[in-house]
Length: 292
Image (tube, rainbow, N blue to C red; front, side, top):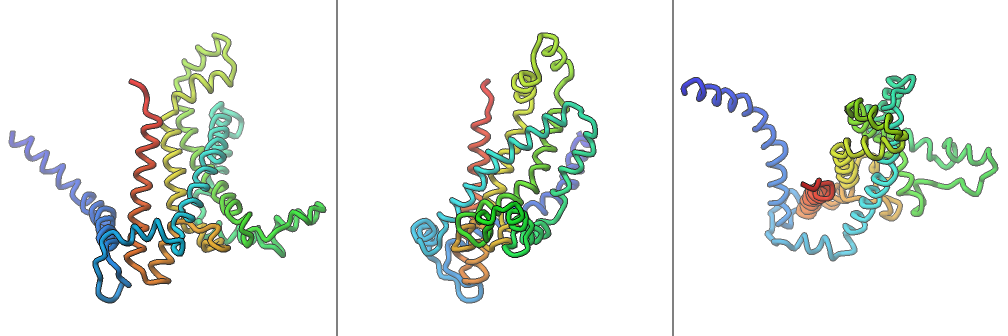
């Protein structure tokens, strides 16, 4: 009995540092954000308690533009789920078959994940530059001058232009997750299906995809919540412009906190982001829930 108690005490002592970090870095800021969201506060003076007025203003005031920012995030999330994840899945299935140079391809596709997002933003600023950017230069060389645009300065193209570097950076991340799942499929299942005359497409559809369904679920959660939390790349490329066409909740939150000194409203946006991320995670879990 004494030995069992001692083991439990040791476990608690080992877990305590991680628990304190978790409470201090994650839980405490969430609680403080919820607290500050109930006040009208500029970050320096006296806080004035206003209850849920910030939440009401967030969803009713066109001047703040939260619904527009949220809509942009949802468009990015839709593009990620409909373009980025299928591309990553296709690459994972192709590499999972054991093609020549498999390890080299894995490394090449994963390299953008390792590059700083700020560096990627600066790189694509040069690519999209309307004067000397490689995109417009190539279009003009091909005689397609009418297609050359100010990609990040036009409302119609800015959001799509922001998505392209996001696609390039993270497709390798999702590909690696799915590749690991594909490689974990028991070989005997594949062999049995092939002996029964199944094609590669049928093996992928009826064996591989159901087997890696939990990993696909994780990728969908990461893609959607990542789009909701997107900030650094958009901040570098457009800072939410032009005319708020690439504004997302995170850039709006920074604007409220540091440019308008509305710490209460900035905290309200932070709370809504947390609620939305958790809500979508629960919704996706429900959608992917397997029948018992």
